[in-house]
Amino acid sequence: MLHIEPMFKVKGVSMHIGELSRRTGISTSRIRFYERHEVLPKAIRSENGYRDYPATAVKMLGLIDDAQRLGFSLSEIRASLGEAAPNFPSRAAMVKALRSKLENIDQHMKEVRARRRQIVKLLTEMGD
Image (cartoon, rainbow, N blue to C red; front, top):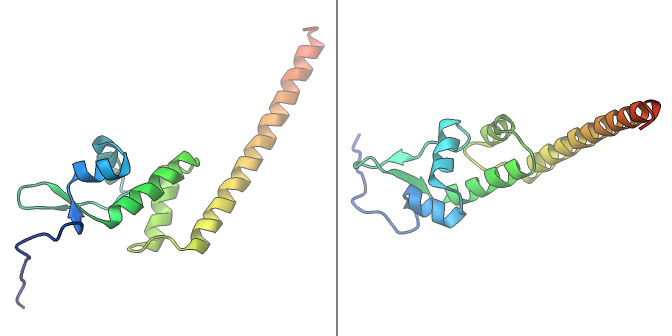
């Protein structure tokens, strides 16, 4: 079978890590971190060894960054992205994950309030 590699890159189809960092506002070290931890698919290496990322990596990193800020762990993000690979998670999958995270947060808040009540009770009993 004949395999032909393109002799040029079409602008916007792929980008180096610095460009990806500029477009997303995520540091290059963080991008490499996501790669090492298999949250972001590994970039294709060009002949000179540079990482080449597809344009979809911008959206993928946005999704990863948003998920982390909402409290999702790397393993939760990896699992969600892995189930949908090579596509992005469906709206239904994202709603399911968000509802699950919300239930976890509600449960955590309930436990924290119970601990707080216990501490207040102990302080009252101690006369403080």
